[in-house]
Length: 313
Image: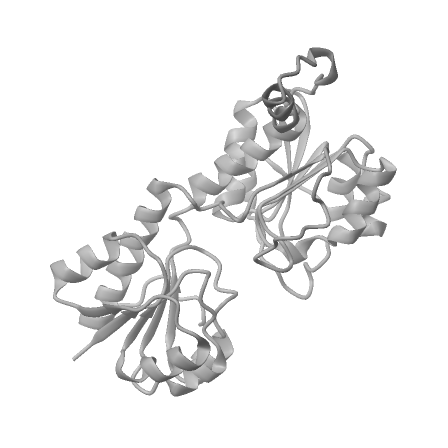
């Protein structure tokens, strides 16, 4: 009999789908690595979000495990190599949080360019500093999108609605998508030199780690801002802080960090930095959507052996 362990906080949509399809499941939140390695032996399915790390130790203990489901995009917290070696399918839901993450990207962008966070704080301090918060418009600005997957494409569509010039850095973009989304694929150096706003929507790899570093920053405009709602390791945080302090870039907005949870950021108290605690997918709509999708995918796999959105091929 197939049984699924829900080991992380997910929307009730998961249990609703399982109940509807007769899939047995248990919910056990907050297990340590050792506890999860012990518990997982009797389950054929596992659902986690970002709070649980599925290590090689856990996977090697999972003698009956067939599938791991991650509601959302990132699977950095799952040892894909160990899963593959053990014949375990790892699935995600790449489309469920696209709108939420794209909207947050522009929310952070707005806050930096119009100094909304600082103005809000000033008003709560019972001040009226109207002249202090002169910002910039998005219209006519050049945005450089690093990575052109589902979120990057959505960001480009929103950017066009603002009347922005859209540049893209992507190794996999097709000529058809360039035309369809009205974007220009350029080199990373061209984007560093030409963009007023650089926003990351790509995966973290050996090639993409620290794409923004002290050397890259020397090529950028001094009034440029950087937005990172993708992965923390894409930028060198120390180099960005130094550049902000020296006035070599104008602002930094981030929802992700190299080490999470980040409770003592080097950017704390900096007026030209807007930070959020990895809430890119944290909308009611997105959480329900990805939970429903991952539950449906696991049902399809366990009942019909149909594989949807496998990431460890």
